[in-house]
Length: 244
Image (cartoon, rainbow, N blue to C red):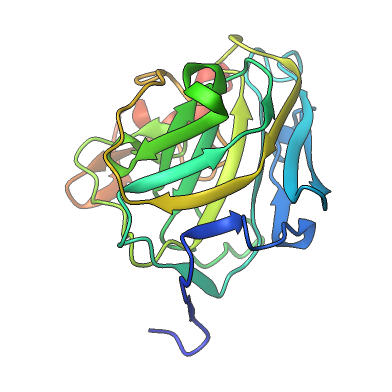
């Protein structure tokens, strides 16, 4: 374990919200503008009643149907131990009808020489608040799908629940399925110890994704990880935009 690593105590199941005040400094945007797009997002903190509103505009015209906007945690030294829980719960006081994505990462790779982050596995689950009763979204660990550069990875290792390093909330176009203004108010994100039945959908779709263009053309997944090959999987987000 790195001496700079801080294993965050979990005195309560709340990762964000609840007894912990939301703070905008703990989050930063990762929008498709880093790929030349025009989508943008912000996280507005509402001190009373302690909620955070993820909002902005999802543009799909600039990148030919693709687009994403997201907020993710900024810490590089904190981990969350989620092993006591069977999944996560999000309390959503207000939402539109768009599909959102909750993301988790258990490693932060060293940056490239040009300062860009290297891609790694990301575990994702899509949800629409209207598919859940009372604005309470519950997702089990098995609902999270491992992805690499926006593509689902078969045979990937399991998420290390003892060392989650990054949490993110995203909205994406699913290549033209949704666009425009979006708004999602989150009261809390917390671990739960209960059986969870999946209510949402969205499995198997291409994913316009912040990590999707960080790799190299021609990479594909095998039992040793990502390496050279002729498969289309490695093209990820760019291939779906017609850029390769």
